[in-house]
Amino acid sequence: MSYKVKIAPGVKEQIRGWRLPRNILLEVLNRLNIDLAGNPDGLLAEQVVPFLDLFTFPFALPAIPPFVRPLSFTFFVRRNDANKELGIVACRFVEEGTADN
Amino acid sequence: MITRSVIYRGRVRAIEDAVEAWKASHDDALEVHDLEDVVREWLGTMDLLAQWQADSWKQLFAGELKKIQGLGRLLRMAYRSSLDVAGLLEECVAWAEGNGYAVDNARDFRQRRATVERLYQDFETRWPFPDKKQIEAGMASLDRGEGADLGGWIRELQGEDRPGG
Image 1 (cartoon, helix red, strand yellow):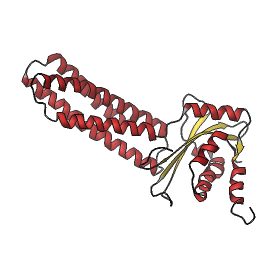
Image 2 (tube, one colour; image 1 turned 60 degrees about the vertical axis):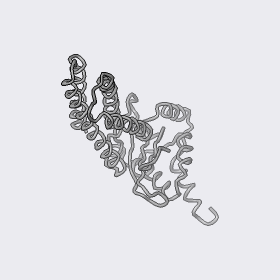
Image 3 (tube, chains in turn blue, cyan; image 1 turned 90 degrees about the vertical axis):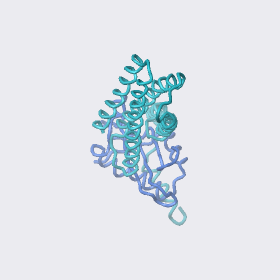
Image 4 (spheres, helix red, strand yellow; image 1 turned 45 degrees about the vertical axis):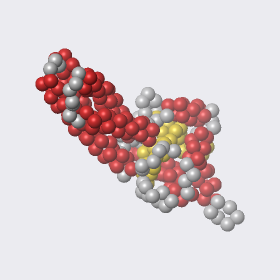
């Protein structure tokens, strides 16, 4: 059974601020809502100290126009097994060779 | 990842020990050759750090890194220890120059030190470390029940593609 994915309002605003083209934005959101929600055991990578229930979900996308370089995304995800819920509480986005967004 | 860090830490520690030994014993021109050896070793160690950093960026953007936070902490320690020991080394080089000795590679050393400082700033800015304030704010808003259903956002975006959506 998939987990339900909730996103904090500040994170949603931050992602909107990245101004990703819709196809890339949908790819990113589907990674969270389909891939991660269906396989948190396999995809949550490492615990974020000192939070016991917070984990990273990192992934990269190849250069997709208008981006000319690969993209790296890291989401910080609070896992609640009792409610089968994943909460996105923070995120980072970096394009290869540029300053962080 | 850990292996590279252990090797790197060992090399920096050896440079620290060599600097301390030199500071305790320098008293003539011959000893400046020892200092030049330490400078050469530091420059070689910085080649390792630059390669380690380049490999890490490459792996990050290839999606090959899972323990991003762990690697980030190791790189941060490597930068800090390298720059700390560079500060000690600079004192020795400046002392030798102040006493009329020319130190081989002194110019390269100073240029490289500035480059490593720039690389470190770039690393701290761009490496995807967590922002603790953002995390705490995000957790608090979820606890207040303000979290939005991600599926709803996706449906909203997909709806924009449909005629009349």
